[in-house]
Amino acid sequence: MNKDRIEARLDELETRLAFQDDTINALNHQVAQQELDIRKLWEAKQHLNKQLSEISPSNIRSEEEEGPPPHY
Image (cartoon, rainbow, N blue to C red; front, side, top):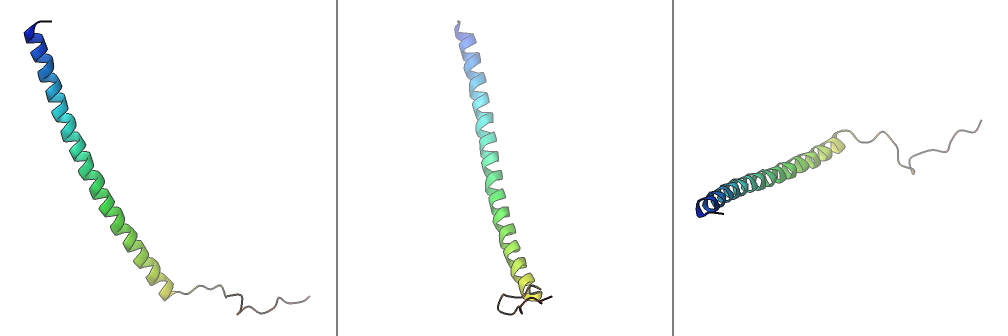
């Protein structure tokens, strides 16, 4: 291989590496942002579940409140 060809291949590899680094950084940023979004959604879900349980208690009675079954 001549020197020009080696330099051209080296330039191509350096360019590809730079694009790969940029892509990895962009993906890392996206994953971090998605993790924050998931945490916010989880907290909102927990808050809504708490509000829902306070607003509408379950229609199912506890075992202590249930009377005996009817005898036919």
